[in-house]
Image 1: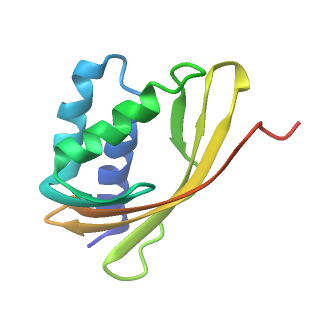
Image 2 (image 1 turned 180 degrees about the vertical axis):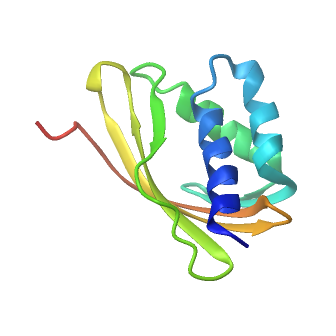
Length: 125
C-alpha cells in the first residue's frame, strides 16, 4: 500500500467533517471507508459507515458551531497501518480538539479507524 493511496483515503474521510452540507457526509465517507469499517472512537467500538457518520455529524454539531477539521501532519505508513495528526477548530478560534488517528486500509479504502483525541483547549496565542 502506498502512502499516496492512504493519504487520499484519509483526506476524503476528513473532508466529510468539512462538507458544506450534512447531505454530503455519507457520500464522502462511502468514498473513503469500506462498508464494514470498524471504528474505535472515544465511546468505544462500533461498525459500519453509519456509525462513523454519526460520529462525524456529532463533531459537526459542536455547541460552539460548525468547525473545521484538518490534517496537520504527513501520513506516516510504516507497515499496513497509516497514522496522521489532525486538529478540529470551532469558528472564531474557539475550542480546539487535537488527536492522532491510526487507520488500516483494504483495497484502497479505510477498513479500521482508531481515534486518539486530546484535550479541548483554546489555540496557543
